[in-house]
Image (cartoon, rainbow, N blue to C red):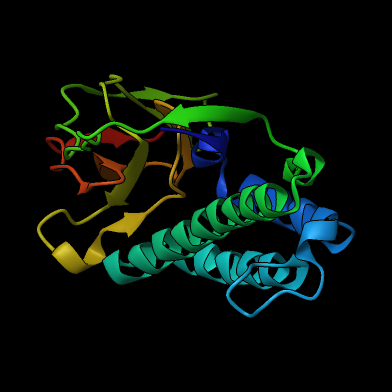
Length: 216
């Protein structure tokens, strides 16, 4: 069976800030879209995306330097936005089909026809980052780069840092990235310990081995 579906996979690669902006732009688009007028509470509308963007902004700021719980709250806020985008796309397809008006499926994203089979695709947890390199930035800047190898199904990358690796509560998370290179900034003449892990739809993979760097 072939069903129209909007291509939204690129949203997963956006940073928190870019995803918030995309949600607000999409919300403004829906305010003038015929398929999203006088709908029920189950349908995401313009105000829905503004609210979700505000929540992500709060959770993203809290996750910077925060603990595991704050990072999970930020990830949940991102997933809520992805879900709202998906529901909005599905709603536009259903209304367009019901009204026999294909133009109602135009919500600003590419439309493809997805074929469903009896055996759905499955997602497995990502593997462990096999190699983590720490590369210093300009001398005296306190900037350094965390570089990991790319693996199939990695999704996004979480980087944590601390100056006391034996204290689990001291580990702090940087903003989640969808690239294999993350920029961090710390204090000079101080040793930092770094660990990384991948995240996808199935959940979190195992932490990498801990590596360290002294900034100068």
